[in-house]
Image 1: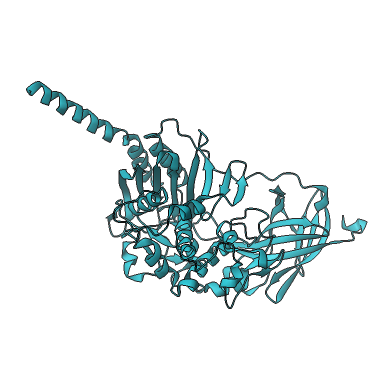
Image 2: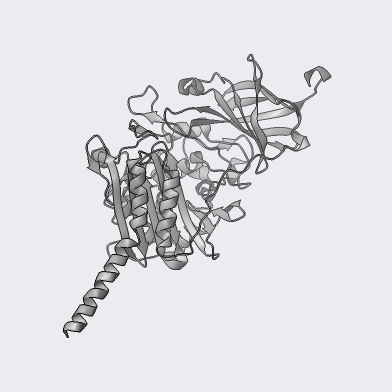
Length: 492
């Protein structure tokens, strides 16, 4: 008997040691990055078959106050908010308050989606929720105490709810579109979006360490956001809060992920049936050869061909990821609160999944390099950029030696990084559009995303302004249209 007890004790010791050791390399990597100042705080959660099998916090939630990260620390999720937003939408679909295939404008008032390019009647709720609406991308940064104030969603729709390509033509990541999804949830539930999200998703799923940033009573719980030097960003909001302003802990995001894996936890309400969950995960629009977008979810293929559901988040002071492997009933969540953490997040995600799936590998999507422009784009084009009732006259010259963009009354500016990406002409130039919004944001870099459609060149021109200490800029989108001009030899 003594010998049997000793053997059992030995086996338990080995099992416990192995359980601890399999995460040691991950811990050391995270702690090394924090010690070097390349990370501030990190939280990780791993689940399998309906159980959290590892979760841990590292580093600082708030350096100034000396608060450490735990698995219950609420981080800003950035775009990992989007699957939560579409889950709230699907709750309304399930009770027949919203139809995914209804015209989005049927749910909007007073501001509605309108054309530039295409037909607004073709924009369905499904198209909004899958980035296939044809609406532009946007990112605006409003620090607390700043001169500019966060607009209402009606103001955002009025200013930027203009189609820049035909609905359902292609995938184009649009915070305008997903912001309108959250607006529809708010309108059709008769509540502020943050309250709607809490009532329809957070409380029923038992996510007690999750809240929308409009809940000011819980602001002290938030993990502080830091730039790539480890300095605190001021508290800020964006113009499309439903796309990225949910705070949640790694533990809560893991519980949300398990709900989407159809794990029926005893303390979670069945807010959606399996059919509605499947609908959220079904591909709507192709992103690339091996990636699609569903309703608030990115969809890819693992090394063995099985489905991977995921979403990333990345904005000033935030890098996050939630990844689900449905065929293996696994989820992994990594949340960080420093600007330069992208590589660490991906390493941590992959190393954590490999503790359960040793052969796991994943290639994150990267921007495609521009290809040579077809001949149809070459020549001189005259047109206008539209901002409501205001227009700005523009001239484009696409040529072999140097291509230029000229704003009326200003000098010509060279277009850099010019080429064709996913059937769209892209490029960068300098210029002051002179519009109230671009002047207020101090936006003087222009990004082009245009396509030849018959006799016209149409699409989006974005005005961009750097955000101090952040990787990405603010981006204000405008619809622009050009017609081909007759070119004299002296113009070439």
